Length: 147
Image 1 (spheres, rainbow, N blue to C red):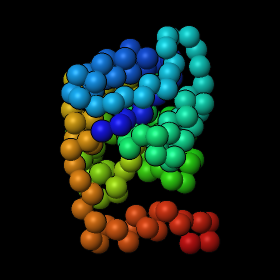
Image 2 (cartoon, rainbow, N blue to C red):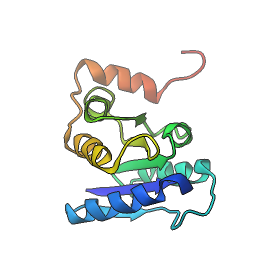
Image 3 (cartoon, helix red, strand yellow):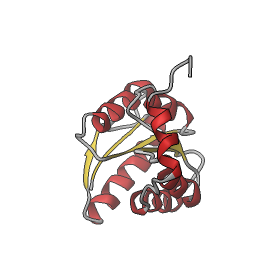
C-alpha cells in the first residue's frame, strides 16, 4: 500500500520509526516531513498529507503531532479526508470499518511506538463495512452548514 506520513517537530522520532517499520512490512511510504526536530507548524504538514491522499498520491495517511489533535484538525480541513484521532487499535479499526477513514492521527507524546504500530496495523488491515455505514459516509462527503 502507498502511505503518506507527516508530523510536526514533536513527532519526528515516531514518524521515522513508523516509516522504517512500514517499509519493512512492504509498504511504499511517502515521507512528507519534517526531517528533524526543528519547530514547525502542524497545519502545514497536515495540509500536505491531506493533499497527498486527496489527489491519490497515497492511498492512506498517517498524521502525527504531540497530541494528534492539531494535525487531525488540519487534515480534516480537506473535504476529501476522513482523519480519525486514534489511541488504540479498536478506535483505528472502527474508524475504517464504520467511517471509511482514509487517514489516522496519533499523538507521539501520548502513546508509545508499539501502540502506534498496533493502531497502524488495525487501520491498514480493516476494510470498510459499507452497508448502513455508506449512507453516513456519503453525508460526511457532502456535509454543509445547512445539512
